Length: 355
Ligand SMILES: NC(=O)c1ccc[n+]([C@@H]2O[C@H](COP(=O)([O-])OP(=O)(O)OC[C@H]3O[C@@H](n4cnc5c(N)ncnc54)[C@H](O)[C@@H]3O)[C@@H](O)[C@H]2O)c1
Image 1 (cartoon, rainbow, N blue to C red):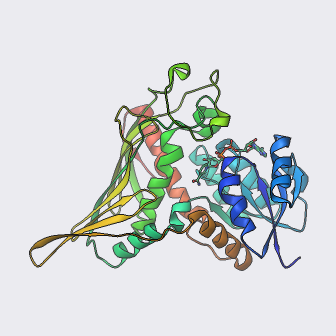
Image 2 (cartoon, rainbow, N blue to C red):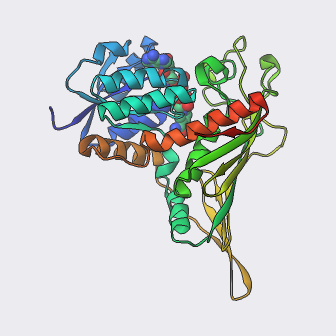
Image 3 (cartoon, rainbow, N blue to C red):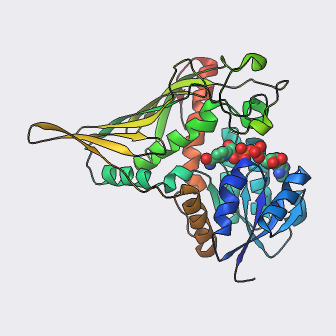
């Protein structure tokens, strides 16, 4: 085994190029051995752009390489479980993008194989590595908020449906829309900051309204626009509301890729008996409390780290040490349970008990 950790990037699209590849390239103890994509030009382009690695177009070809230790799975959601399981069974460690999978049963299978093989299986819950998220967690852990009894998340955008008509908006590929694509980050972040409370029940409604007439959808910018397809499929939630009871705080949320609200609202309110926090998503936070009979508020600003870099550095540390970090599948599985329950609740219009 060489001194450097040999890794492969499976799926060379947006998140691979924005986050995983640049982060690996910054680590002196990592060698990107393969760039893999079923679209050959994407794998070829990565080799050319980054000046390293070999292009492969079918990941099965590299499963048996004894020098390969770890992979990033950066494909769309429909391939997360299949590819992650194949690599773990081949003895490789895996960092697979969020959400863990399209549906809970796929995520549970991933967890089972991770436990059976003893391989690291991390999910791309990048917020767990953010500076301000960890500052909020520290304040909650230290008791600065007292009992945190309710957390409210708003992940509402005016017009931000990603890749409309493509994999993001096709349920068979993605498993869902705004909830599974964005809500996953907010719910995971809340569970992390609140000390991993156990979800007990969930109730929710998911709406497919503003994007379903693909040709009439009006927008100013779009993530993954290169995957959009005007003649494609749109059968996922562009808006979702829900409430989750846990053995800690109640969590409620209002989320949307697109809503007729004018201005996007992306924040989380942590409400406690001694204090509260409004955390702007991927931003800074304000801490509200009282002191000597006065209402106080403390605005915090921080030099934000690059949470993707931290996530990937920590993954490589897990590969080297065998340790589990805060992105291990056992944590991410709880968010999968909640999202499945919200979608099931929306279909049945009933509250769902989470096992
Ligand atoms: N953590 C985050 O903040 C974050 C942000 C954006 C996207 N994501 C996640 O990353 C994943 C990919 O999103 P994206 O925007 O990069 O999509 P994308 O479509 O830009 O890239 C996916 C790539 O995977 C390739 N691919 C598909 N099936 C493959 C297979 N079997 N083998 C090899 N390559 C395959 C596609 O050809 C494509 O190039 C999604 O699951 C998404 O939820 C995470």
